[in-house]
Length: 247
Length: 89
Image (cartoon, rainbow over all chains, first blue to last red; front, side):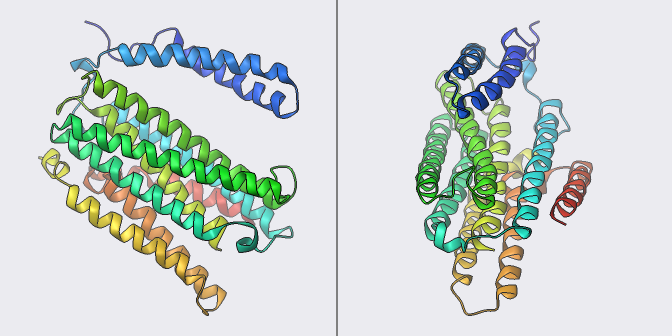
């Protein structure tokens, strides 16, 4: 019997090359074009792993009842707890810096109404994600795909608004290396935006797998795990939005 | 059994979404009121915490998890609270 959670060569390679990706990104930000090479190794490893994952059918063995302390779901929660600590350290550090440095008047540099709308977009995407899980639990694959598509689309809208704000801020002289405000702003929202990107990739993965008919009423754990991650990213923004924009 | 409470939750999700959207509007609106800054911050913090709890409880289904699963989260949250406090002050 095939082990449902078997690891292929690409899984560890994705992890290893992700380190190279970060290293390459730092080189690139420092103006050295050679950083593209280590970044590309990650893109190749991730692409190979992604394609392999998409074509691998989810076997019955990988299905576990969704209301027991089963392994994958537990792992997801432990991962999310580590993410709580990660974002907690970013927020704590940023607020500590804020208390010790001069700070611009936030509504003058940041577009608060636009970001309030963006928060609303992310809340809506959380709803569609929850409805997608609800749909597949009722065996409605088509409906789930529509909700997932809407979720990914709202994620893209969120990012688009975010990036427009980034360009505006850099233009106004609050870039990631300009002042303490810019540094902490880009540190917090940048890592959050990165999580949104990962979430969108995860949702696209679900959509492709759903189109291949890999999800059924009794076999949809991946939707649940991706949903947990997406809702977590929403929770992080629910916390970040008031801290950065309102307080 | 639990699976049954899971499915057909569409209406609950819509209600939670309504509350989340409303609270976001209130948070945003409160910054335009003449209330003292401390009051504004208090309102925003309380509403945000409620929003986060609602998402975790309903969208992430923690409300429907078993008891040991629920209590598991207390340790990392406690750690995070300590971490954040020590980093800030």
